[in-house]
Amino acid sequence: MNNYFELKSNRADEYSFVESDLALIAYKLYITNRKGESIPFFERYLIEHPDGQYNELSYECSVSHTNSLGIRTRHLELSPALELNPDNEEAAAKIVELGG
Image (tube, rainbow, N blue to C red; front, side, top):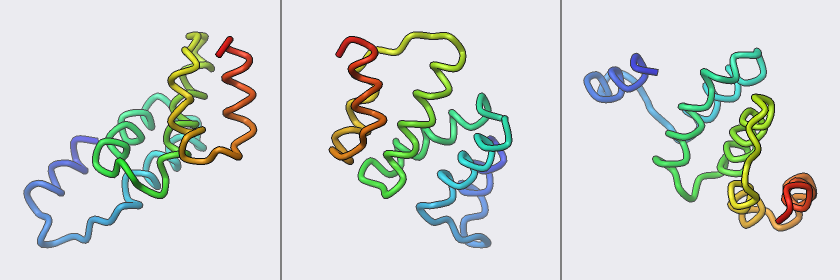
């Protein structure tokens, strides 16, 4: 992750940085069982792109990873994903399961 930020800070004129970069890096790490490494990228994506097109994916993967570690999440952590897509049945079911 530090390499990404170093390039973005110091060599942005040499590289093109677009919205999907952080989300794609995070998702690639996530699906290749490097979930712990993916979370900082998902979180940074949400900070840099609060209205971004990959917010729902970022929330869902972050919460899913937290659950896979055996940490119970509060239903509020899923609320942003449900707000972004009210038809998200998986997020709605998880909120009910967690007592929300």
